[in-house]
Image 1 (cartoon, rainbow, N blue to C red):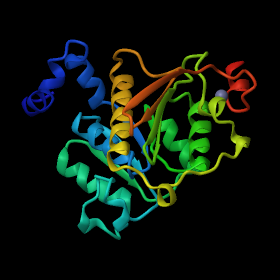
Image 2: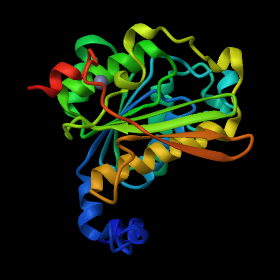
Image 3: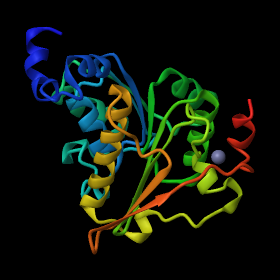
Amino acid sequence: MNDDQLLRYSRHILLPELGIEGQEKLLAAHALVIGAGGLGSPAALYLASAGVGRITLADGDTVDLTNLQRQILHATAAVGRPKSVSGRDTLARLNPEVRVEPVEQRLEGARLDALVAAADVVLDCSDNFATRHAVNRACVARRRPLVSGAGVRFDGQISVYDLRSVDSPCYACLFPEDAEPEEMRCAVMGVFAPLTGIIGTMQAAEALKLLAGLGESLCGRLLLLDALRMEWRSIRLKKDPACRVCGGAARI
Ligand SMILES: [Zn+2]
C-alpha cells in the first residue's frame, strides 16, 4: 500500500481484526454486484469506499425518475442512462482506485456463469426470482459465496449461502425453484427508501467480512427485518437434502 492508501484505509487498518493484512485482501478482491438499484446502490458504494479492488456491476435497466427515491448510486442527471454505467461513474468519483466494470445486461446463462466464476464474492441485489435462482445455481456450481438480500414495503431479509461449506444451505433450499412465489415488486407494492439502504449496507458488510476473512458470516441464518417496528428476527436455516440445486452437488 502507498501512503495515500494507508491514509484512505487507516480506519480499517486500525481495526485489529482487519489490519493491513485484511485491507490488502480487500484491495486484491473481486466482487460481483448483480443489480444497481435499491440494494446494489449502498452495497456497491461501501464496497468501493472500503477499497474492494475490482467490482463488476451488472444491471440491464436505465435510471428512471421513480428510482431516485432510494437508488442512491444515481443522481437526477443520470435519468435515462444505463444504471451500470451511472453506477460506475459514481463509484469512480468516490474511489478512483477501484476498478469498476459495468455490465449493461440482465445476467443469465453463460455470461452469468463466467462472471460468477471470476468473482470472489457475489451480491444478489436483484429484484426478481428468475435472476435470484439463476445466480444461486451459478454460485452453487462455482462454489462462490452468495450474499442475498431483498426488500419491499417495510420488510427486508438477508442471508449468506456459502457452498464452500458442505452443510450450507443454498437459496433454493429455502425458496424452491418450483414454488413460484408471488413476485413482490417495488413498482407495485412500494418500498420505504432506507429499507433497501439498511439491507444493501448489510450485504456490503457480509461481503467485506467474507473477503477479509473476518468474524462469522450469516451462513445458515436468515435475518428478517420489520422496519415498521424496527424488529429483527433470526431464523436458523438447514440444508434441504432433497434440494434440486445443491442436494446433488453436496454429494460430490
Ligand atoms: Zn439447496
